[in-house]
Amino acid sequence: DPKQDVFLVPIPGTLANPNGEVDVISPKTFKITKVYPITTNCQPNGAALGASENLFLGCSATTGTLQLLEMDATNGNIIASIPGIAGGDEVWYNRGTDMFYCACSNNPASAGGPVIAVVLASRGLLFQTIPTSAGAHSIAADPDLNAIYLPQRPATAANDGVSVYYAH
Image (tube, rainbow, N blue to C red; front, side):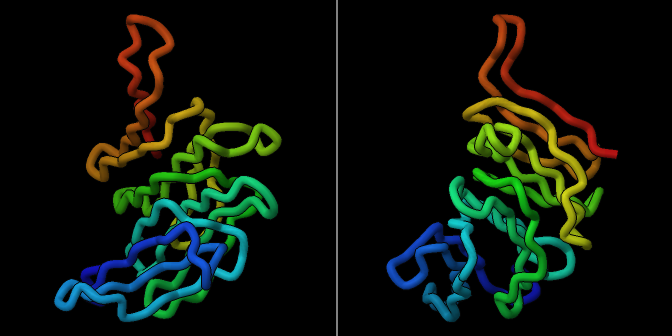
């Protein structure tokens, strides 16, 4: 986080915080300066920082309450919960669209199976889900082209295994 001059690291779970936490680390001392406990079911794997100090967490928990979370990066308060979707891994922020993208390759079948969750960053609202495949857990966004890249297992010899989605 360049505004705070810290690293924000999601930790899926600890003995003290089994639902996960975000550790704030000083790049000067390499020490944890704060811990933001997550008190609701999450177990974050990925995180992406938005334009307004909002930290989007890709919750990996696939039992109990299914959700993705948005946190205030300055104090650890949860500012939005995106219900009904989970199994997230890598998360990306696209400044070109002001949207977060989460590769939810382990989203349970009961919640629609593997998807990309597209979230309006400034509002913390689910915009849409895009069906993907099991194992499609990495994602990246190009803010100039407004393209989202998601590696997937090739369906055929002609398919290189990379899906490109264009955000509008």
